[in-house]
Image 1 (cartoon, one colour):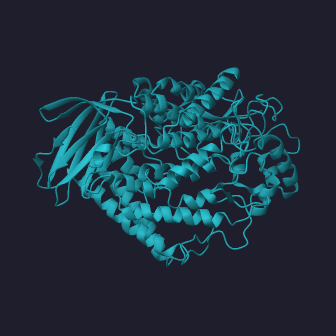
Image 2 (cartoon, helix red, strand yellow; image 1 turned 90 degrees about the horizontal axis):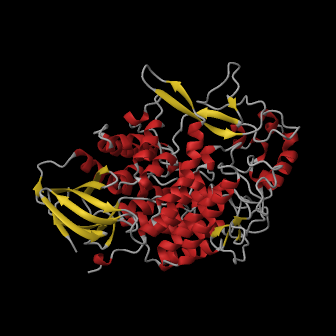
Image 3 (tube, rainbow, N blue to C red; image 1 turned 180 degrees about the vertical axis):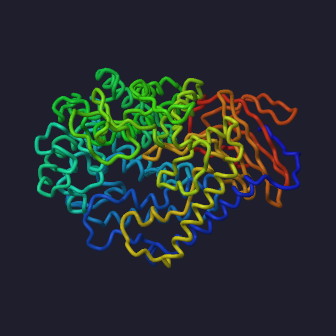
Length: 633
């Protein structure tokens, strides 16, 4: 074991370090208050009410605490882990008694009975975060294996056709692929006014639907459900590529090659279908394997597809799946799949002048048949009469929004080409790489990826301090809101926990692990390093220690560790979230040590700091949730 000892003292710790440690403390106080007030006396969630019958909402409850284990795994108090586990079990117990219109509970075998992998991806973020936080928990491992096994070809659920490499429905789960009747959705308030319709009319070949407003007409509701059931309840869609995270999660626990090979097989199936479709990923594939089987032969018009969800949703699955494949075997070629889709849009983009020097590239986000595209969509290019611009089937031209796909491509490849692509996609109208907005707290914890990259490029030196201030502000704002309502919501719905979750993890991920926010709808944490506390023998930074990744290049990283406590601290630094990387050279001051290890030990006497640069061989080791053996001494 290679040991590095800090010898440089400081008279005053850097501001980013004290703010980082304050964020950990503030988060603990907020979670303690949150747990005390927003659950019943027996610890159950306040929603759903007795007698509720529905399909939606399980993911929203779990989003109320999904990131607590992750913050614990970065150095948060043990309370975050214990509270998250208790609340997860309470949600499982509650939803296992809530009925659906299908005659069985919302949760069966501790898993959602059947939803799309936009929502299942959100709900399973907890499943992945708990693996990082407590991989030794036998119940955590057992659930990881059981959940993944629901998508094997021989599963009794029937979710997956292994021969055709097809998931049999856009909505799957513990009850299989055949519970997706959209007419049942009216029982929990979706109906014709469901929020999707604000994105425009998804089909142009249904005579009764001439404009988006027709979807709001209650008289069209029966026809709407008929079309939805015909086109969007069977067959495969790109969002199902998120299942690769469920499989990768099981592999990280077990090293069982069955999960690993499933990822490669399923990803390759989608790549072949994309090639068959001329290089554009189709958004719907029938159970026979035919593209457009239920959409009159069209490769667009599927569930959350090119015509109504657009690139924001279509891009999720290819990016998540490619990341998982790279993690599992180290081959960056997997990234060519999502990269090809993004480049396809870039080639069709339109440059719009933002100032005297710079243009912003507006990408087409959707594809569909010609028709009336007058609908409410902010920030998109329009014709003179206000209609959304439409060119050769592509429409909704707008900047790359806050979608992190380009950032994740660069992060996984570390190539100059991918880094340039990120810069080329900058929105010069917003210039969001120059600012940190403390109000930018969304459920996705997104919005500052470009500012973080500007810091890594040397163009935003104050970013570490600013993002810690913004994170603290978000926690305080949630606490203030809870106090103002007297810790009693006026209205309790499926979002009540998510909308009050006081934990903010993004800035901590960026600074302490050199990691982007995982793709929210089901991605895993991808990181440069991970820390472990030797004294407490647990994941995360030791008490009082702050960390800053200040450089990420194709060669390696720069890392600064500061001990703000009054005690000496000893810790491990692991290369990669799952030990998947390898340290090859570590430099501290004038000392340079060559090594071949994915773990180093750091000793930080009280009042000291250590800065090091580490060259790394990325994705060279088999990834695992396993805690480093060096921690158990």
